[in-house]
Image 1 (cartoon, one colour):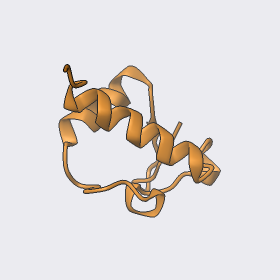
Image 2 (tube, rainbow, N blue to C red):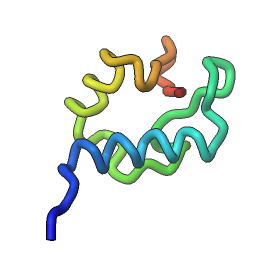
Image 3 (cartoon, rainbow, N blue to C red):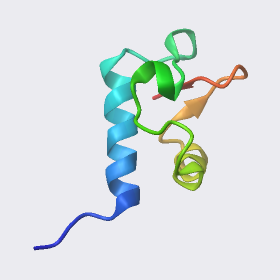
Image 4 (cartoon, one colour):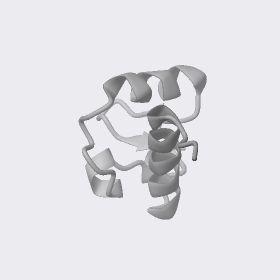
Length: 66
């Protein structure tokens, strides 16, 4: 039985949580904590890669949206 890699699981979880709480623009952006992301300060490298690839965006006040 093969398991998806942790970065893929984390990426999908973050995107789904942001989508669920309506964080789809800078005006509706949420912190990971507000969006319900487990261990919001963990896996910083995954978050950095997502930002670099444009999967998520970050506001000046530290909130994220898709």
